[in-house]
Picture (cartoon, rainbow, N blue to C red):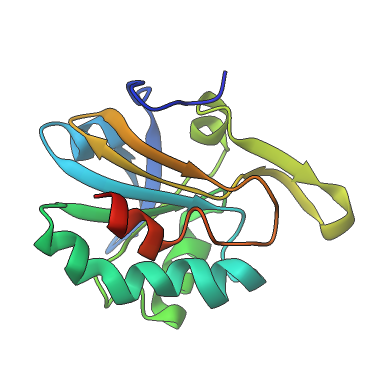
Length: 162
């Protein structure tokens, strides 16, 4: 079943690259008692993700914080090494965006947001969406209906809804 506004985020273990290598991140711990903007996208270093989706959240991170958001998190079905490299190459890590890997796609599947596009070599990836989560409950969900666009799930659209 696809996640919806009002649903509680299922417990998930994501990954990030720490000083000593890959580390697990309990998403429930990041969400408990906090207001978080989480956006997900099909893949690190892919066209729309790198040119539009991630940069919008980088530009608007401080505006989210000014509206009471505690953290902005980017999730992709990639390994933590790729997410760390993308965070460094794009400047997202320096901009304060938390880059988390859904390495096995289990979080994406639990959210009901997985898709595959064999023609472009994308298998078991995440649909593009952004959500506002308050204490683990989805308050706002903006999911793209079409692939390759970043309109509904853009940082600017989410910022207007926060």
